[in-house]
Image (cartoon, rainbow, N blue to C red; front, side, top):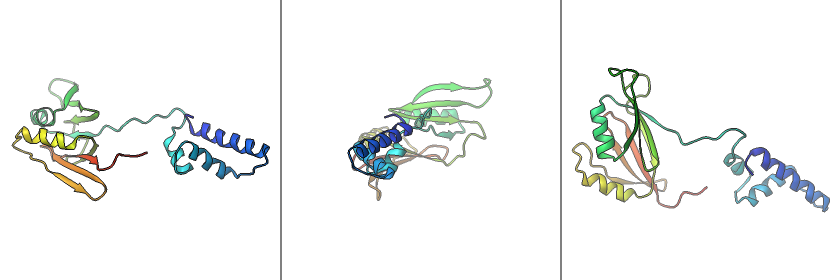
Length: 179
């Protein structure tokens, strides 16, 4: 099953098959049975999880406003350990737009005036929060010594603020993230 249409066709086929055997179920009951067969709590959860034809959403990539390339590289590369994937300028004397990444997290950094507001926040799920915390503290970065907070919604979070007022919230769930 790949699409919403496939799941609905399965429910219709199930309903017809049961009717031939003298078992009557409503359309909504057949949808719930299909969802149950795929291990979902109900049809609404299944419908939300399967893709629509031709649509495949990828993880969002936040754009963070920066004002100094030197400060950005010191913070994102040297302190946080991100790698610069690419850089773009329309001309050598124009603002930078760049992509940095680390272990599955991707961020865009921009000096362009209209791209983002300083003071934004980015939420990043991860595993290994204690290791990252220890790594950052060991660097003795003079502008940040983050701590770990216990969040009331079943996660542990370490917030780090970049030189431009943007907050990165690295968060590790206390229990494995489910479907």
